[in-house]
Length: 159
Length: 425
View 1 (cartoon, rainbow over the protein chains, first blue to last red):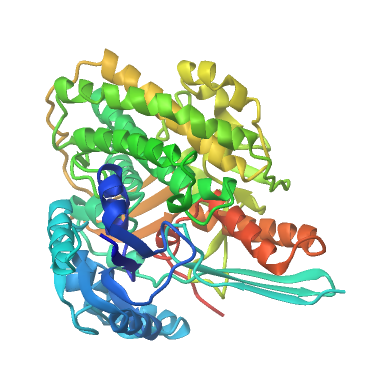
View 2 (spheres, chains in turn purple, green; view 1 turned 120 degrees about the vertical axis):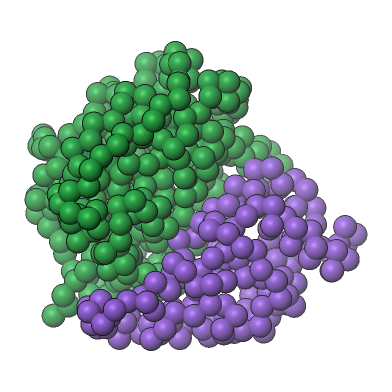
């Protein structure tokens, strides 16, 4: 086997709980994964990261600014497969809780939204780009992630 | 005479997103702006109107890595507000919950985030075959912390068992004792990394104040607020001694303590209370403990390692000596009240003030997290570092040193950016 799965892990607006689950899964899976996975973009593990020609991008968090939207589109463009990870990425919550604020609360945060160039509405990953697969949970379910990862390895004929 | 602009975008190997801008004119550092660029999720507003029945689970979502600290601090604030005094067993379960968190969270930081800086590597993934055992040591230690959290609190992230007035489920003694070999293995593995940090010559010293919740047992939950200048105040008065400082360029506010910048976290705790550590930790970490008190921020890594050892030692003692029994949670009538919770989260002092109405809904919540308290101190340390190296190192070398310094603080940007309640002028 020469080709490894080129993997990217990305976080947008969220508490990064699934990133923590992912790093904890390394405790038991690192030896096996390091044989078949090239950790090409994992900011929590390394500085020199590349968003280029990824086989799979795992994306957690919701999209709360134009900057995030552009970055997500760049990730999509450079990834053969994109998987939305966890509750904020899939249904927006709780990162999108400000979408449900009443008028009073909205008024309070209005100037901050403007000052820091945040989007009027927080969106799910699927509202911005095409999503190929999902791993549910808050944080993500470990077994569901393993299922999707193993399925992806098969799709890319990496054994 | 040197004019330099230094910019670092999206600092790696930290929790959350941060960037930095520095300006040097005629060899003088004229601007240091550390910007927390994480998008806010407005928890301050979101928790208003939320029931205290679900609050500790809501605030757990502020931060994935220290979610347990947020839950426990929130629960403590509610219990103090309602006048609840939990059982001794519940208090011991809370201590074990904190120990599980400290073991896992500190190990993530000192091995995966900061250890590559000791070996001048980009990542643990780049370690040589001789160094790679550290990666496997980290897995053994994190696994032990995870197991402790799972058995005691139900899960390592967003733990469901700790609740107001008690634990939804009390662990069995059999399940607790089953973790002993994992904790002992973790203890054995830890000394390798302690030696590396002890021997590492990196020095980011600058005179500053250190603040922590200091208690007799070093359990991260009980005690009084102390600083290196000898002040000692009850935890409920902590906020009165803080000075909120608006940083218009960052999506978070900073804090001063008694008008001065300060540091919170493991280094502060060990500087202020190394005598409170478990006796086995004091015995076996004697060599490392001589380093403290220390002004060197890089020693925060060594201090975190010592706290892992303490957490293991006290957890082993509790598991070995306490007979845990099923116990119902305290029942209480909701009432209009206010309460404060203060605990030591992995990165430092965490403060919750909750104002609750007669139906048990939150009227107002005020939360101060460790990274907000360290932000101004970090900027001053960065300024000091750049000023001292501007003639000696290249721009790239200075950038790397700055990142090492920031990582040594172990900042948590997810936490720091979600409570903003500022009136910008």
